[in-house]
Length: 224
Ligand code: SF4
Image (cartoon, protein in one colour):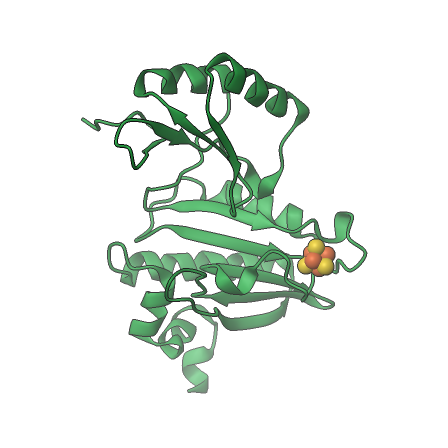
């Protein structure tokens, strides 16, 4: 049995925990904000931190308080340590931004819904940007989407960590459904060939981007 409560991350003091409610694409409702504020006051949570993944972390509660806080929030668990999709971050895109060329928020929500809970070799983060200015940090995410005038560009294998890597662009000018289908094939290939805890950046470096292209791009094998 897991010694830690579900959805709780043990902190460096080895005593207190953090939790991260799921906020797909960084969107949050007024009722969720109210519930968060009430829970923070009620349970005297010492730190509330907006994360780089467009989520809100509640930090510093005791083990016994974790389930009560989840009950008060009525929000899904945002995964932060498991081998699965952790989040899809997104810029506002063409719903509000002057420069937006594509619907990044809508696509990010679709991706998060599609892959939430999917087991993967390692944690996966996705970034969706509504134009090439790339405010969604797409090129340093495992899967990156960038909206351009004629459709979506898809990149794979990006990472912003200690061994940073710019993702390889696999295709451009795709309609959303085709970009989504390409992400499906990328994750299928990664699930089949990736080693446990091997992030996509290391995976691409090991197998080579040409092998990735051959596996996921229709006709790529014929062209080589
Ligand atoms: S990436 Fe483009 S569309 Fe998205 S917020 Fe930045 S400028 Fe706007």
